[in-house]
Length: 287
Ligand SMILES: NC(=O)c1ccc[n+]([C@@H]2O[C@H](COP(=O)([O-])OP(=O)(O)OC[C@H]3O[C@@H](n4cnc5c(N)ncnc54)[C@H](OP(=O)(O)O)[C@@H]3O)[C@@H](O)[C@H]2O)c1
Image (cartoon, rainbow, N blue to C red; front, side, top):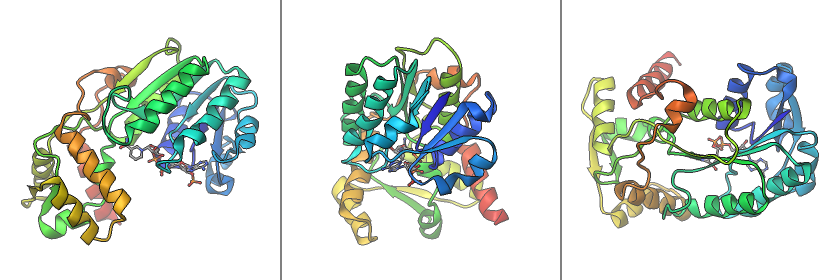
């Protein structure tokens, strides 16, 4: 039995889809905070159990009988370590054969603010003695392919990432890699740096221009000006800080990687930025 947490989220749903290509639905548990959100998965035969990271007893119940567990990192920044600990403790009590965790690229040394909770979680997994597989996911392509409206409206993408390269990949590819790890042998103790095809923000603007058939530029701002622009656009201060910190780390090369770990797990090349942009714009056009 394979338990996937966060299965109602974007990545979780894609992991379940990929698992269903490989195993029968009765072997898959969608562990979710709100079971009604995944009635469609139940209708496909997936086992649905309630798991709220803030209620450790639900983690123990949701992991009963689990052989393999995928902990998809939680979404409330600042609260994630105790939330993840609830699932790690439940997996250790259950004696699972494999515990996979969606971490961040270079979690052990990445200075990006978001890496601190991933680093702490990886330590908890290690200390619990779990047979672990660390899926250190790079940035999602969707961070760049969704919410394009302001760039299209103003003809420019604004950021503070300089000429840094980001090795982003699509959620569907990270999900397929996770499903491969959960359904094949030889991944215990492995730590994968999962990276896609790298691009700079200027290259992002060039590819978007090509796909749209009109020029979109990249405007690079100093970090303080970038933060002020995000605040004036109405973003909450904490979120604006995280975005500026992310760009600072793209600029410094901390979200760049050249390993072929993702390609090896997929058995093919990950989707490119251009493919992803064409798909998003085709779907927007169709709707
Ligand atoms: N690499 C990247 O670029 C990147 C970008 C964004 C996020 N992330 C990380 O990757 C994770 C998955 O991404 P995503 O796109 O799938 O995020 P998402 O769509 O926001 O999904 C988050 C999932 O976490 C669940 N969740 C939140 N709080 C919970 C709680 N207390 N108990 C149980 N479940 C809870 C949500 O459940 P509900 O449906 O009940 O809300 C949802 O299923 C994120 O949570 C974040 O840690 C990575």
